[in-house]
Length: 333
Ligand code: BTN
Image 1 (cartoon, rainbow, N blue to C red):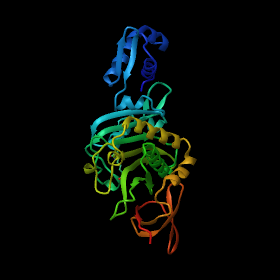
Image 2: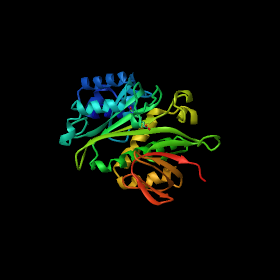
Image 3: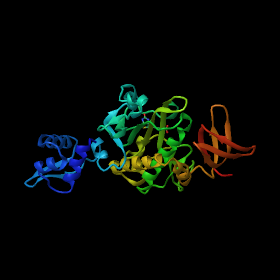
Image 4: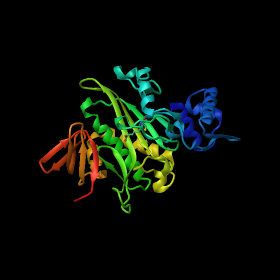
């Protein structure tokens, strides 16, 4: 959100302030104040004009400005009611030159001369959501579908650490809502229901699809796409999946997205903290697993994770380190 607009919001949230007073306090013209107030109203904020001045009456339930308001992380939100895919839109931003900063070190979204904010594309619904291995990703209205477009200062080989950070961020955000979620290597967020009979008792709540482009030693751009089944009916998620509505009822998506992005930002600024946090929330560690890679199937016990995101296994033929593959949790012997 533009800095002056944020300042207008913060000021009128604390009580009625007249237009002239606002203009003086923020060092802008009265016409500029009026424009910001109109833009906020268009964005769904309830701005009352009282005898004493403007006062913030209500915040929109969901949307770009709604998420930016109160967001404690440097992201600019581009919101869409419906879009084919937030990852595809983020790729468009890269090639449209909003990614011009990609090669010269600038940001994707520039608020003012000095502020550098990464862009998050956020949608209420997607019509062409994609998952890993180019699978379809059901994305009805009511979910949390977002893509963080960023330029981490990392070599491409270290990119998986960012995906793990996203899985931890999602897990922390939904655990704060009271959902007993954990991570299946490398980055599926699951919910365990011990009382379920038949299959594993684990249901997928969220998935992450990371795309990137890099040179030999530096990532040019990275898109971390997160799909979280939030306020969606059980019948609208694929078999083997669940939603927050199913687990705990509807949540405030604005608060959840803010928490998720805040957690992601904290983790990415302290990369050393990512693996310990992942271990803390992992369902996979200590499990018997079956990993399918492009060339083989490996069965064993998952012992640990190592930088930047490889799974350490103990198999009947000795220790193995697996960097990429599809993981299935097996029942204990
Ligand atoms: C997976 O297969 O587990 C990853 C699913 C990732 C889905 C998200 S939803 C937001 C973003 N846009 C997409 O088209 N995909 C990702």
